[in-house]
Image (cartoon, rainbow, N blue to C red):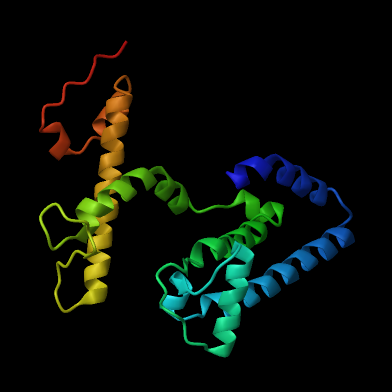
Length: 213
């Protein structure tokens, strides 16, 4: 939401930067790159390198988000023992995850050449995010109880965790892509080309699409 709100202003700023003299452009871009790299190093050194339990769930931190982040950095430097009071729990990851994303967005769009090139993989993943979120509970993860909350990764290759992760993840993305194409075919029945993309397993269910208008 924040990116969408500030996108017009950032776009105008980038266009204004492209119209500056070359020396000024080089100076501004060099400053931005140096600032992003320096800020990214501070985030990596003081936040990302924390132990997993401290990075994802820090106990004993109170106050605002800035105070919680500062509290986390101070604990990382001093290696202090964290308390286990259940009422004083604060997640640090949601308050710091925007830092690498923002730095990547700045560096990614710094020059016109970078803005003109992109990977289709990200666009494809963006088209199946909803299906990926839904299918992860039914395809990617497993539960130990009937109708229970999924808590662990599905195991298809016991004893080979990396291969099992790759196989289950490929199965997850394949199922999400098929679900997305099937939903698109049901929403847009007038396009015969989209209907042809429906997997055979879905067409075998004899779904009757509305005739084209």
